[in-house]
Image (cartoon, rainbow, N blue to C red):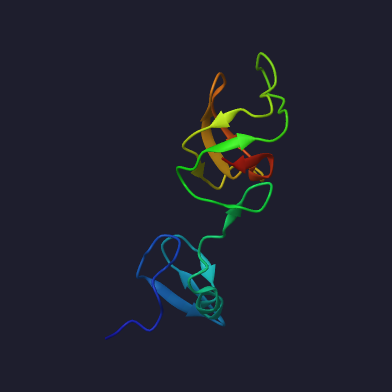
Amino acid sequence: MTQTTPPCPACSSEYTYASGALVACSQCFHEWSPEADAEEGSDAAPVVRDAVGNPLVDGDTVTIVKDLKVKGGSGPIKVGTKVRGIRLVDGVGDHDLEAKVPGFGPMQLKSSVVRKA
Protein backbone atom coordinates (compact mmCIF):
# COMPACT_ATOMS: atom_id res chain seq x y z
CA MET A 1 0.00 0.00 0.00
CA THR A 2 1.39 3.41 -0.95
CA GLN A 3 1.26 6.47 1.23
CA THR A 4 -1.18 9.14 0.01
CA THR A 5 -0.10 11.88 2.42
CA PRO A 6 3.28 13.63 2.37
CA PRO A 7 5.81 13.21 5.22
CA CYS A 8 5.68 15.73 8.06
CA PRO A 9 7.69 18.91 7.33
CA ALA A 10 8.36 19.43 11.05
CA CYS A 11 9.75 16.02 12.05
CA SER A 12 9.97 14.11 8.72
CA SER A 13 7.74 11.34 10.04
CA GLU A 14 5.98 9.24 7.44
CA TYR A 15 3.09 8.55 9.83
CA THR A 16 0.74 11.29 8.61
CA TYR A 17 -2.97 11.28 7.88
CA ALA A 18 -5.61 13.50 6.27
CA SER A 19 -7.69 15.50 8.72
CA GLY A 20 -10.27 17.38 6.67
CA ALA A 21 -8.45 19.89 4.45
CA LEU A 22 -5.26 19.55 6.52
CA VAL A 23 -2.65 16.84 6.91
CA ALA A 24 -1.65 15.90 10.47
CA CYS A 25 1.37 14.10 11.92
CA SER A 26 0.71 11.37 14.47
CA GLN A 27 4.23 11.72 15.92
CA CYS A 28 4.58 15.46 16.65
CA PHE A 29 0.94 16.56 16.10
CA HIS A 30 1.96 19.18 13.51
CA GLU A 31 -0.86 20.15 11.11
CA TRP A 32 -0.35 21.79 7.72
CA SER A 33 -2.04 22.40 4.41
CA PRO A 34 -0.44 20.54 1.49
CA GLU A 35 -1.73 23.24 -0.92
CA ALA A 36 0.08 25.98 1.03
CA ASP A 37 3.32 23.97 0.90
CA ALA A 38 2.96 23.58 -2.87
CA GLU A 39 2.42 27.35 -3.31
CA GLU A 40 5.51 28.25 -1.25
CA GLY A 41 7.74 26.09 -3.43
CA SER A 42 11.35 27.23 -3.50
CA ASP A 43 10.75 30.30 -1.31
CA ALA A 44 11.53 28.26 1.80
CA ALA A 45 14.09 30.75 3.16
CA PRO A 46 13.23 34.46 3.05
CA VAL A 47 15.95 36.84 1.88
CA VAL A 48 17.51 38.84 4.73
CA ARG A 49 18.48 42.37 3.72
CA ASP A 50 20.67 44.96 5.43
CA ALA A 51 19.72 48.56 6.27
CA VAL A 52 20.17 49.73 2.66
CA GLY A 53 18.59 46.72 0.95
CA ASN A 54 21.58 44.53 0.08
CA PRO A 55 20.92 40.78 0.50
CA LEU A 56 22.95 39.11 3.27
CA VAL A 57 24.28 35.53 3.33
CA ASP A 58 26.15 33.43 5.89
CA GLY A 59 29.80 34.50 6.23
CA ASP A 60 29.34 38.12 5.10
CA THR A 61 31.17 40.99 6.76
CA VAL A 62 28.95 43.86 7.90
CA THR A 63 29.39 47.29 9.48
CA ILE A 64 27.22 48.66 12.30
CA VAL A 65 25.31 51.77 11.09
CA LYS A 66 24.14 53.18 14.45
CA ASP A 67 25.29 53.10 18.07
CA LEU A 68 23.81 50.08 19.88
CA LYS A 69 23.26 49.94 23.64
CA VAL A 70 24.32 46.62 25.17
CA LYS A 71 22.69 45.33 28.35
CA GLY A 72 25.33 44.69 30.99
CA GLY A 73 28.04 45.89 28.63
CA SER A 74 30.80 48.38 29.25
CA GLY A 75 29.38 50.76 26.65
CA PRO A 76 27.64 50.95 23.30
CA ILE A 77 28.75 49.26 20.09
CA LYS A 78 29.95 52.22 18.02
CA VAL A 79 29.01 53.14 14.47
CA GLY A 80 31.50 51.68 12.00
CA THR A 81 32.33 48.57 14.00
CA LYS A 82 33.13 45.82 11.51
CA VAL A 83 31.62 42.39 12.23
CA ARG A 84 32.99 39.41 10.30
CA GLY A 85 31.44 36.02 9.59
CA ILE A 86 27.75 36.61 10.31
CA ARG A 87 25.23 33.75 10.43
CA LEU A 88 21.58 34.10 9.44
CA VAL A 89 19.35 32.75 12.22
CA ASP A 90 15.75 32.86 13.39
CA GLY A 91 16.58 34.67 16.60
CA VAL A 92 14.68 36.23 19.48
CA GLY A 93 12.14 38.79 18.28
CA ASP A 94 13.32 40.33 15.01
CA HIS A 95 17.02 39.59 15.56
CA ASP A 96 18.02 37.69 12.43
CA LEU A 97 21.84 37.73 12.54
CA GLU A 98 24.27 36.07 14.90
CA ALA A 99 27.95 37.03 15.11
CA LYS A 100 30.93 37.71 17.37
CA VAL A 101 31.18 41.47 17.78
CA PRO A 102 34.77 42.58 18.51
CA GLY A 103 35.09 43.65 22.14
CA PHE A 104 31.62 42.33 23.06
CA GLY A 105 31.56 38.64 22.09
CA PRO A 106 28.79 36.56 20.51
CA MET A 107 25.36 38.21 20.17
CA GLN A 108 22.31 38.50 17.95
CA LEU A 109 21.77 41.59 15.81
CA LYS A 110 19.00 43.01 13.67
CA SER A 111 19.71 43.25 9.97
CA SER A 112 18.25 46.77 10.03
CA VAL A 113 21.29 48.09 11.97
CA VAL A 114 24.02 46.70 9.71
CA ARG A 115 25.31 47.42 6.21
CA LYS A 116 27.16 44.94 4.02
CA ALA A 117 30.85 45.86 3.96
